[in-house]
Length: 295
Image 1 (cartoon, rainbow, N blue to C red):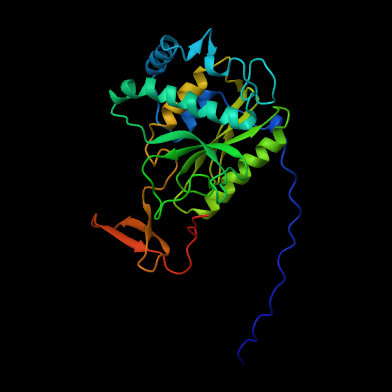
Image 2: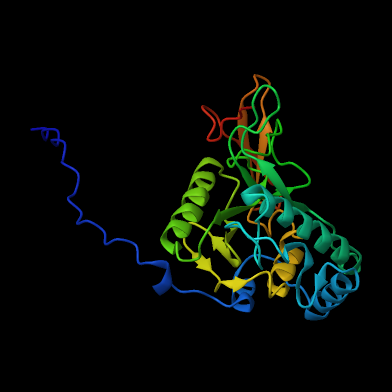
């Protein structure tokens, strides 16, 4: 006699997972450990020192701090800090200005190593109304110079796959849980939406405290916080390595390519080498994981 079909089984009753530990008891790394364990290229200490000397000679760094941020503060008012006299828009513009100065100083030095600029850190607006006016907030993103997206996306979109490093701003370094939640939420959204990303990087800024983040499906690694106004070197080194990194070093899957089909849909081509050394390409079908939009 044929066996009767098995009745549908209820889902397993897994116990509730414990809440995430607060960030202040989570592992935090030194910048050196962070860079060693990440996918980013190594930058020679001598190149960092030469770039710092150039920034000091140009007046970008004065008395051991960023001259641009000497009297600005994210939380408003005067004093050392980031962003006063313009609020978040002010600090976002300052971050872009600092990045431009770092790249200008570092580019000739790293060119000797065969490195070219692949990504730039820019002040962006999250949305713009029909009249071209800012409608909703300011931010910073490190965007690829050569797009991986067809068609290209507006830079204010966090889900833009060309957003290589996203930046999160808060007014106080005591909001550690909020910082962690925001960084992780942004990373999950993009990693889930874009199958070409294996990992990504982020920067959190809380007044003058800054952290770097490496995020992948299996690893979350933040650095210790540091005062980026009074200690410019970590930001210089981080931007020297991220801004001159290859797409693969920034966390993009070199075996997967985004393509635009004839009917205007996004598909993904996966390259696989067979046993004879020939590269075979397979294209996804059906609804795309990532849906392009101009809004």
